[in-house]
Length: 286
Image (cartoon, rainbow, N blue to C red; front, side, top):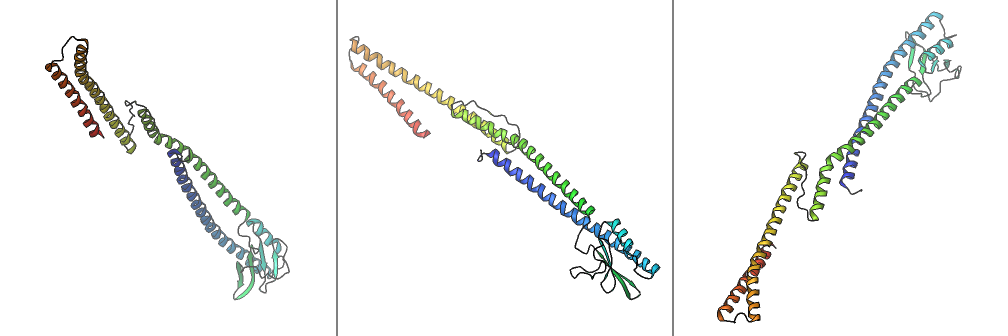
């Protein structure tokens, strides 16, 4: 089974289809992720500008950061991100998770997302997702949904490719199987085998060549049979004459005269010539 042309053709087409679908799905996933990240980054930039405007406006109205925690919490609820506000010295003034208020900004935190300044005086710094959380739950859910859809699309495409490969391999190899069956019948002596020519491609040319070969072999076989019949007829006449004369001489009906012996000798020569011709023909065929 594993050495059959059907299996190798099926395996080859399946590998080509699966590799193509895998590469297409991978490129689509990366393209979607990259495009989505660009979209998210653009949205982050806009949100940062809004946060800066809201907090700068709050400081302008109140003249301090006192009571800013509820505003930071509302901002975090809108975006689904963790937002930390620190003053110019790095002390946390507000934390949407309520964990770091009053503490110093951690050394492991990245640079602030936005710095709030008035004139040349820094008023505070906004840290968005300071713990390294790359995406919000909504963003990650969207990417997971896209990747899951691509996975199912790839699996469905792979299954469809396998089914189409089975159908195409059956259609492509059907003429080859017909040729194989015809050849097996010819090895058993049936030279009347023919195959149907269904296409004009290489397989069709092979089928046409097989039919031509089968016609040639059938003609040669018919010529051989005719030759054997003719040779048998040619041998039968001198053998019958020799047999008749020998029986007549044995029964005493005829006398062994020189004429009779000459006749028998000529018939023997004729038989010898026929046998020599058959030998020459056999050598020529060999």
